[in-house]
Every structure is written in structure tokens, then in C-alpha cells.
Image (cartoon, rainbow, N blue to C red; front, side, top):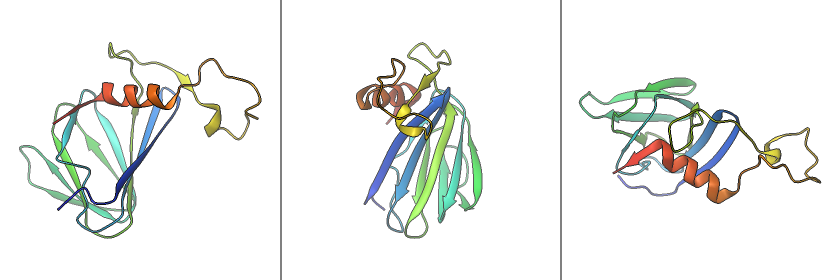
Length: 137
């Protein structure tokens, strides 16, 4: 098993964080596993995955299905078929663990993009917020 063609996209609205994960090939993984500082939900929208949570037996989930991942439980996703897609969804938090609100006009059909929104985050800020939620190992 390898990370293969694993890719992801980050996005948010208000205090809802959405991170897509694309596992292009069967047996691709999201890495060696990681933990989160907060509970979150994973929505499998295409394909199927084996979820390995430290201390528990692996379990298979097929789209469409959601998976609850508890904080501080190391977990790993492995694609069981090509073109598997899932989303991690959770409350957006700052470095102190407080729920925070942000707005990205690029994700809105109601925003023309002609004005600069002071609450819009840069790609670097999104990556930093994403790192606040995980304890990668």
C-alpha cells in the first residue's frame, strides 16, 4: 500500500471545514495515519475504504456513508477501489482550539470576486489551519 496518487483540497464556510481526499488507485492511502485534536465526520462519497483505527479492528465503508472519527485516535484510510473520494468535515478551530468563522468568496456563487473580502484566507492560512487539527505521525 502506498500514498500513490493521493490529493486533497481544502475549503470552509463559517466554522465548517471541508477537506476532500482523492485516492486515485486501489490500495492508495492517506499516508501512515494521523490523529485529530477534535472529533470529526468523514463522508465517503465515491468508492470504498478500509478504515484502520488504532486499537480497533479494520472496518470497510462503502459510499455513500459517513464515518465518525473520535479525537486522538490514530486512523488511516485505504482505497478498496480506484477513484475513491471522501471528505473530512468538522468545526474550524484556531490554534487555541476555539471555533472560528471564516468565509472564502471563491466558494460562493453569490460573490463576484471583484472586492477583497477581509475574512478570506490564503492557501497558506488554510494549510496552517488544517495543521492545527492534526497530529500527523
